[in-house]
Image (cartoon, rainbow, N blue to C red; front, side):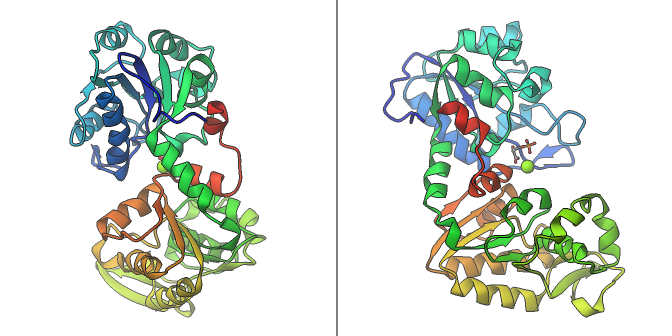
Length: 371
Ligand code: 3PG
Ligand code: MG
């Protein structure tokens, strides 16, 4: 894979795939660490006098968080000057691309508005139109590289291609992670991602994932079983993979917005679980202290709620204190780490599903395409 660092992009039209996919709350895009990271790559290319055309996605058609990238352009402008063009492959987009001056950048609209994006090949109109007007392609979106989509795998077939600064950094640190020796701390909501990492190393489960593990084992958490209904399809698959998985022994539930601690024996409960409990935090922190290599993905609880940030915060602090090699990741956990000023971590990945796939040793279509 080619690094962009030694290449001369002056006066060239460079198509850059980034990942600005973020949470949407009340129709507002929430600023995430991804903006800052990709702005570095865009800034670098602008300083080298390239003409920069940025492409990205937000959500998926039919989903609540599927929007245009207009707000993303505003947020990106906090870090680097870039103009939004509300078109992708029409005459307007092409004109704006051809009008670019050296050192200028534009952001095109959500590539997932095009059906071609989901074809995952290079002989569709999307790839044809943009590769015709561009000189080079850069993939800076490690976090989308597990998707076989046209903006990721199509352009490298047509254009000389490079790794972006952010993608290169992700690969550098993740390759250093001695994963066989790692203690895994797996939280978040995506059991179907986490399952790829089970049956090998010791796992401390937390977040919704920890609850899904307990339910798969036959534990009845009460109201929380109902809340997780849509996420329990994986139960039977998960059941046979829990041999090395430690599960929470207590939880914090929400009663009139207050944090109330309940032991596992107090369940089923009619209250919703928002965090791991104090006993679990302490037990996990002890395990973390002994580990030589640590990999954590996904938060331990609903840290957006003030009374329920404790689990995520304390686990991150325990990791920070450990002297070994530490990698954490997932969009939410990287946001939490920034919020609690967790600094002493060897690498904070901005990826979720792609990170798990990479760590599990799977081939990522986006990286294969760059080779
Ligand atoms: C992410 O947010 O994890 C990436 O942008 C990939 O998005 P996707 O899961 O919608 O493909
Ligand atoms: Mg995501």
